[in-house]
Length: 92
Image (cartoon, rainbow, N blue to C red; front, top):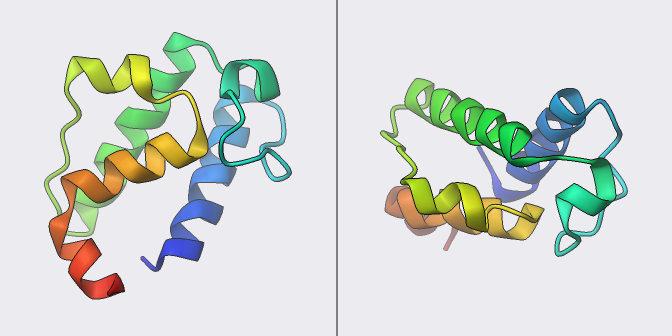
């Protein structure tokens, strides 16, 4: 999945889980404030990301610390990149 498609996919996922649109949310905007995504919602997002990338043949598993730091779209995208070095190589 290309970086721009990954961000669009993530915004849709966040919108679905939070029940509020994340399409206009800034990448560094706190998701709790912007769309009401609480810690349970962040857990759902991270679980969905893990599931999506396992299907793409990447084995992503986030540690417990990711839940507390995954508060913005840019932080979630960075966590995905950190867990998938193959994606960084493909995007270069």
